[in-house]
Amino acid sequence: MNQTQRLDATFAALADPTRRAILARLAAGEASVMELAEPFAISQPAISKHLQVLERAGLISRGRDAQRRPRRLEARPLADIAGWLEDYRKFWEGSFERLDELLDEMKASEKKQKRKKK
Image (cartoon, rainbow, N blue to C red; front, side, top):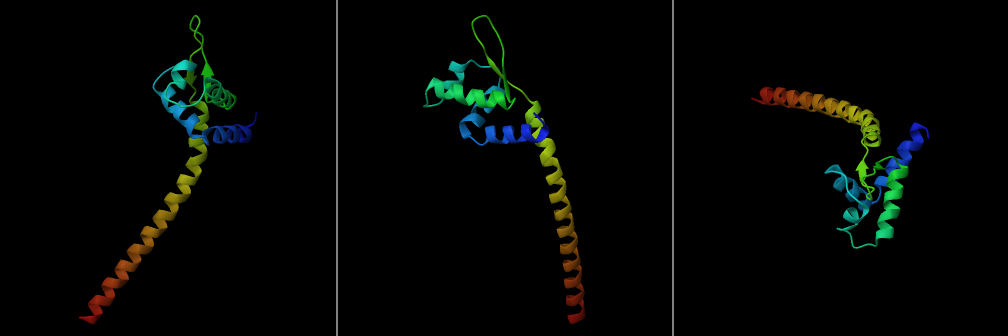
């Protein structure tokens, strides 16, 4: 899977609020499928399908603890998204800096006009 496909899979996985809630829960630590299903009013098979989407996107992995197979959060895909968003953050920062400069020029011009009227 190339980087574009990984980003697509990650964004598609994050598009669902249940999957985002599962990731938020896993940010607090590993959890079994039953533990992850607990707060939701949906069936365990439905939770398992959400987990499969998250696993395919690389957002979670499955461990092994005796009979349990706890899921854990994998940070790499989220770091890839943060890196992708960084370029846009820089764009917006540049836009805000230009807006600040324009506002400063307008304030300076307004002050000059007020002094001339006095």
